[in-house]
Length: 117
Image (tube, rainbow, N blue to C red; front, side):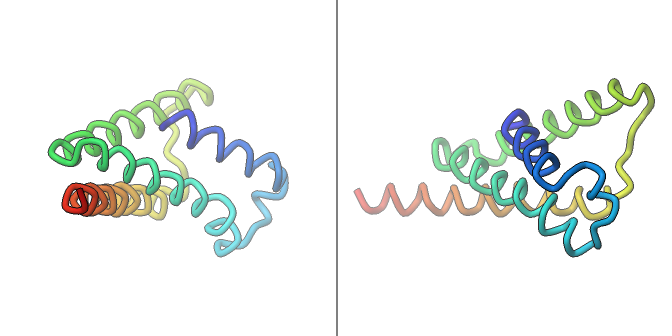
């Protein structure tokens, strides 16, 4: 999950241009940099929850915490200081919401699949 989200964010940064990121308005930044990874995360959490709905919340919590800590560690190593993004107040709630929504969709999907068979 971490690899796919990082690849998507890197791809959008390359398409937009790293120099242009600073010039984006908040709405454009939200649309181009935050929404695509959030939608991908919802899909990935939904697939994960559909596979095993009994342990979905445990998996969601562990994947979310591991991804969050891994991201902080890698960014801190790259910048050689503890890096907390200036947009953390938007990114963190959006990440939590993506995890919750994706897990709920996956559980509901699993229940519908089980009742359909």
